[in-house]
Image (cartoon, rainbow, N blue to C red):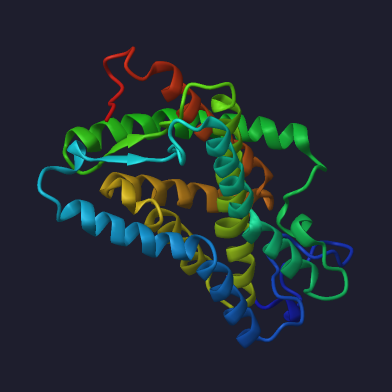
Length: 278
């Protein structure tokens, strides 16, 4: 792991801060408290919730594959406009931690660049999207195959990507949900977390493990397959972020994977034999 930013680590030629320097002039205590609070308000809390959910599923009579984990569910069945309001509210509030991270990154000190510091901006849309599409093509297919195998082996719940009413806003909400997941997870679990762990003096291997384990843990509600598959994805994403210094391609990749999963399920569920349904 790189040294603290005040020691000059993570600096590019010309004195510009590199993508992995973190903390500015903030004390270690402040960095640690800030990081714990951000996680407690976002994906750290999701990890605890996921663990409780998994314990409940594992101790319930019957196998895991006979139970379902629904990702995008209706909040007001039979009342589409109210349901839409709940969907929009859920997506918007889930992004609040991203705005919090942006605010915290702008307070690092002179020269702070907000989300640009972790490579989440519009300066390189073409390369980010191209890299994201390539990542999604590799990880998406492998992830689907892994899910089908572990579910058949009884180590995973049946994942139901969506159970929304068949109304006009169904697909737009699924796409928006996919983008929200991607932005939240990659900004917090990769860009922000690694930046803060860098500032706290963690080694690269320890920071990679923390990010990957956190990513896997908040997917544990899906089963052991969800845990392990997302941990592997987490390792790959951290390595790519260390190489490129940008979360932009990771957000694009994650969004594309989820869009295909959500919309694909909506279009194919019950029409093809290989796709498990609840």
